[in-house]
Amino acid sequence: MPKSIWLLTIGMMINVTGISFIWPLNTIFIHQELGKPLTLAGLVLVFNAGAGVVGSLAGGRLFDRIGGYYTIILGICITIASSVALSLYHTFYIYASLLAGIGLGTGMVFPALYALAASVWPEGGRRPFNAMYVSQNVGVAIGTASAGVIASLRIDLIFLATALTYVLFLGLVLYSYNRLSVRNSSFSGVAIAVESAPVKSKKRIRSLILLSSAFLICWIAYVQWQSNISVHVQNLGISLAEYSMLWTINGVMIVVFQPFMALFIKKAVKSLKAQIVTGIVIFMISFYVLSQAEVFTAFVIAMVILTIGEMFVWPAVPTVAHQLAPKGREGYYQGIINSVATGGRMIGPFAGGITVDLVGIEFLFILLLFMFFIAIAAAATYDLPLKQGKKKPQQYTGKIMFISFRVW
Image (cartoon, rainbow, N blue to C red; front, side, top):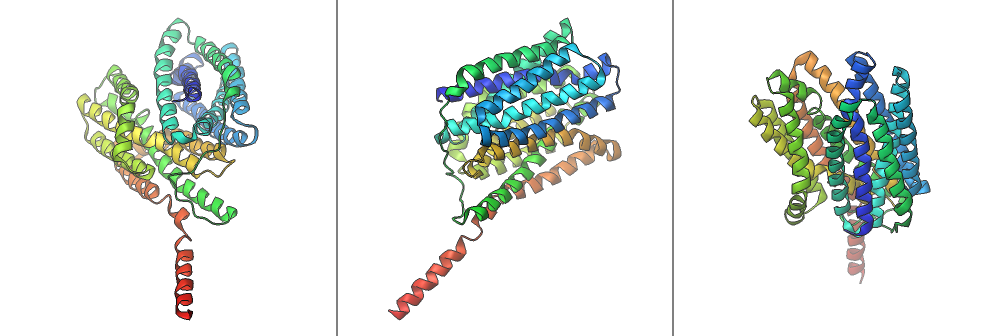
């Protein structure tokens, strides 16, 4: 990889590390330190995710207007200000507002980093997105492991740690990101209909909507592991330590096996669409195994399968979004994709919780398997709007040639 991608992946790792200081301890802090019920704690996290959606959309638009460098700086500054204030003020309403501020700031950074990675290495294809995906998981591993150590000293120190982490990130950005050379990217790999620009833009948006629908369903299902399935696991008598081990397996697999997975995909999977569809099918298999699991070993198998599916889908979707984006709107398209992922993380635990409370965990698994069929259909047909209108001109040209031949 070029040096510019290494700088961006290091930035992504620091960014995710900073976020990961806070998210594992949010519910504990709100419930135990602020004395609020779990329902209210969940509502605060919904507002945080909602602010992340707004931040993603805003960050994507700002990338297209003022560039990735200034967009990232703005998002970091909002996050630093919110984190510093959180370390000083601990009343509930201030906490909820500042947590939303962190969601807004970090939400602006993600699409800008993705769009910038694709812009500085356009010939890299899916490789810059693979690199950003792996760096996120390294950041999660570092952040969640460090959060427990910091919180054991004093829980409110995690906010100061978050602020200091983003100060480090800001220093990296100020020192090196203004030197990154942004180039025009190609749209190879996606068949774009040769039509007028307004129609072409509408067709790209329709394709993006189909792609986003599949992505949203995958995230709604995926976050069940972090919410309702964690409760289900403990109800079966599996300890919290064993449940945590599942996520350790997830993180280790992503970091260790990503190069082998990337090589396999390059050799065996012929298109990004096939990569996404294959990943969703693997997700389905994982959730079927999960629906039958009653012992820890079965959950390990389900997690291994889930991680393989994740390595297929997560890097491929932003890659396709970048290829779909018209010139000058790369940030906007990445903002939409990132907001969809955040929206899935926001909707999933709440919708899954209601389903489990009303009809049980077994019905949730059935519902998710059905939703995966919808996701497969959406992913398999996302490029159809781009192909519309391509055959008619060919048929018309053929008729003209035939008539000309007869006249001759």
